[in-house]
Image (cartoon, helix red, strand yellow):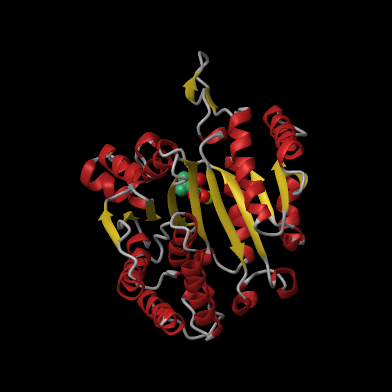
Amino acid sequence: MPANKKLLVLPGDGIGPEVMGQVGRMVEWFGDRRALKFDLEEELVGGAAIDVHGVPVTDKTVDTATNADAVLLGAVGGAKWDSLPFEQKPERGLLRLRKDLGLYANLRPAICFDALVDASSLKPEVVSGLDIMILRELTGGVYFGSPRGIETLPDGTRRGVNTQVYTTPEIHRVARVGFELARKRGNKVCSVEKANVMESGVLWREEVQKLHDAEYQDVELSHMYADNCAMQLVRNPKQFDVIVTDNLFGDMLSDEAAMLTGSLGMLPSASLGDPDETGRRKALYEPVHGSAPDIAGQGIANPIACLLSFAMMLRYSLDLGGEADLVEGAVRNVLSGGKRTGDIAKPGEATVSTGEMGTAVLDELERLGA
Ligand code: IPM
Ligand code: MG
């Protein structure tokens, strides 16, 4: 009997606990029907942790996360904690987990399900069949660079500073993930920066090219400025396969790519660290959407991004690609069958609750996987 997989669940704030509840049901399904057993631990993160522990993530939770096979996170943040000092905000909990676990490779797939081509604000022909992967560097760049801060100058005016900084190892390790991903997909990488303005962008471009020429000549590599990429994503998104970019550009471009698929409520993500001696990578899985305070507590949030994040965990942390396909197939069929939460419904269309969507996906899983 293989050991149970250790899973740390961090529901977080807003709609986080609601959508994570549906993942809990899926975990049970896999235990009952596929003999896939998990040891689950649950902890607070974000505002929920601030309310109880006074910090957005405790040392103990970071420790548990470090030792888990995978971490599943819902969402963090909300108006209640907006006025806290910067260092104490809910978001810092998420940023600390990313940094302390060394999760430098953030995979944000943007896939447009056929049943949802009409939910996108772009024309159906532009997005139908879309399947791109945004690979965002997640532990460097301007998010973490120093010096940083706000200072008051002698004349009483103030000065805010952040630093965009990348080293060659930081660029190589994320680019390597990009090339490896591309080999299993459409074999194309587009590297994105602002080499026309920023030295860190010049370095990024040169180093990605160097790694390509040394080890990945079989993969097609192109380079693009970030502003052009933002434009190309809405003009002709299907030209891309894997986009590899830095932390800040990746934050923005992944939100943009998300909307190509119709709703932020559909998009999962994986954040991965370096493989250890057994090949296991530290990993955190989370929906790309935030805590959505406007609809929190009403039971109407779309659980699909969170369920698909669980599927990514099966694929990337547990090497269970077949089981991940099963979850993704169940979601696809449920959407084709017309089930819609509010975020993906057309005006006037009937909608289902978070729990009803979860039930529909589980029923379909049962039908496909029995
Ligand atoms: C994301 C979010 C976070 C980020 C916030 C919540 C800190 O926007 O994961 O994209 O900026 O990285
Ligand atoms: Mg973001």
